[in-house]
Image (cartoon, rainbow, N blue to C red):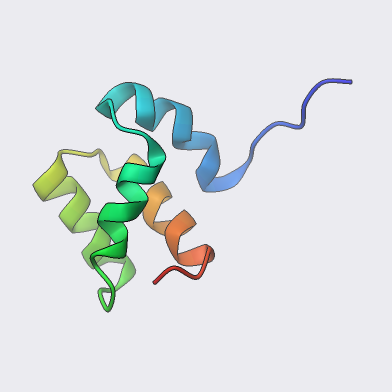
Length: 70
């Protein structure tokens, strides 16, 4: 039986790791340091300070917030 396809923000994770050369844990740790910021503020920091594309940054923030880490 084939493995279930990953859906939602986590579906971006392999591409994020390949594109930016850091594990997802690294990006979640970066987001941990942004407690108190709103979703789009966090996306903006990932884009401006870390060079992530909008889709990748948005997926990381959505995953992080859904986990209740914020």
